[in-house]
Image (cartoon, rainbow, N blue to C red; front, side, top):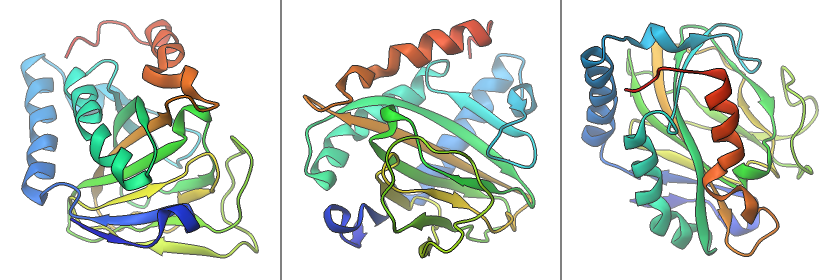
Length: 218
């Protein structure tokens, strides 16, 4: 594992090799196999999303517990990388299709410390995450670009991740996805004793998801 950048000073850093690429590929494959065993497919979870131009395939860790276990297991290392005592909030798996984007936005309080982890590119072409440079306060609207704000584009290979302060820095993927599809895992934490500690384990999101979705016992 290799760290590029200064998280404390810049609000983001790149983590090269957060997990081995073989683990990233097999995590994707395991999700696919478990869905198949349950009589489902990725398309079962396709839905419109305000951040995207097209439908994305989203699976919440609240409904696929291996993702939650993955989030909890990464907590000690992300705590070390951030220099903060963290508690896990939530995570989710997403597949973006060809030419899709992720509109520029900032996140809600449960995303105090965030990780965007690349799992698989169908065609092996890196699709950068873009991170702004001007701090914001809390969740912001989805927009198509950064305007005049300087930003950095971070390319990732499978197993690489970007660690960023999701509530403080705007981020997105303005460049259309060059792959037929790409698979990613997004993971979030809050600080123990901090202003957002009430979002640990994100029970509010869980209740909301339970109202929206049923019978997702994969």
